[in-house]
Image (tube, rainbow, N blue to C red; front, side):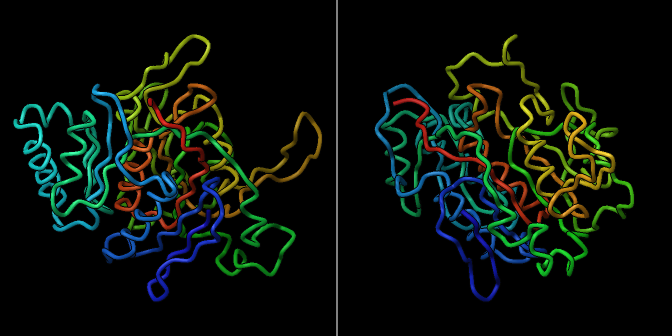
Length: 335
């Protein structure tokens, strides 16, 4: 699905499936308007859940549920988080239980939280006044599609918008995927100017990823999320056969692949095993890239709704202009 945001027209969508969704945020929308982030997150919920937006039957065992409260009622993220803990404490009947159950507080682009709840507890939350939806955490898998052809931005359409925008110069693309191989030549910052002043994102170090040396003027942001996966995961993780990293580093290659397609820099003398020698570049080679690792190296790459929505929330706050989300499926974690 492709969603284009516009201050005057709201949003436009091609009505497709959730594979390789490109969600436009737009410069200045993230913090300058409460309307645009709400459009983004409402559509993010439909991307992740389709028509199944309800409290699904689950066992009495606690599992992660996502509580969506709509637009933020306060501009102070700290106070938003405090209110989330208060809501959860009112249901669990203690601040300590609420703190232990809380997985994420969504406090920038929208208001909500992810928490470990039983079926009956989730139902109690859903019945409180002012609540929009309580949704079970789910797994999603990796996808790709021919996005540039669909958008009319391929090299075969020279009259497209890319030349008019200096092939992405000044645009920040957020990638929600499996992470990044920072040593790849497609992330070189040769000829790239200073990082846009409006950028408020972070660079987080971890296993085999040094945020200071691995990021540059091209790869300007790198975060990773795993709490939603760990809270509900019953699969073996970080095995000898399927290693992963507690960092933005890509263990699969899919995130490196999609970020290269979206905004990889020019790389001369490139080929595939000596064939097709030429110049490799992404669709918008002058754009900046911010990576949000939400998928793990299990069953060829899986990601949870809770982690994806946290990345959405923080990417909007960080100041991305476009979100690339090449994910699909609606597999329930447990039934």
